[in-house]
Length: 182
Image: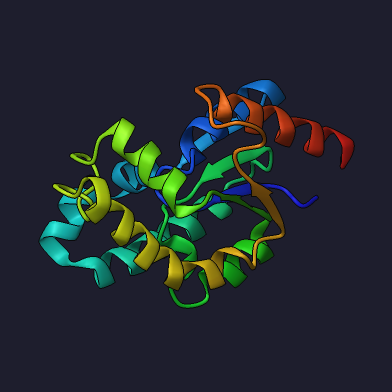
């Protein structure tokens, strides 16, 4: 397994939560790419998109990933933004830089998880709830799945029943996978 590790998947898949838990278990660094973007650019992702648009954001987001890849640290878990792998050749770049892991949930579970965490901090989902949210997630996933499924590893979630500790279960599963492949 090539290092670093990039967690990919749709909003609400648990990339940040699983990434933090996994990094803690391994004793590695964790970087949420949205937070890194804000630190490097001095502006939040939401504000940048509002001011400059999605296309400019995607270009700058890619620059951010490239800058981070030049750091001399390899034992890192990165949580990417949900749309990152779906722009230009970003999926190929992730695979060249390290190991990509797709946290795959079905649209119904994703919509449920997003609804529980709230949509107010997710600009494209703001004010979408219930059936409207589910239909939007299904629509976006239909276009993104072809990119996500190019990941080096795919984890189908939940690993058992849908429960509060799903992210912990996934982190533990990935921990075992990484430990067994070192």
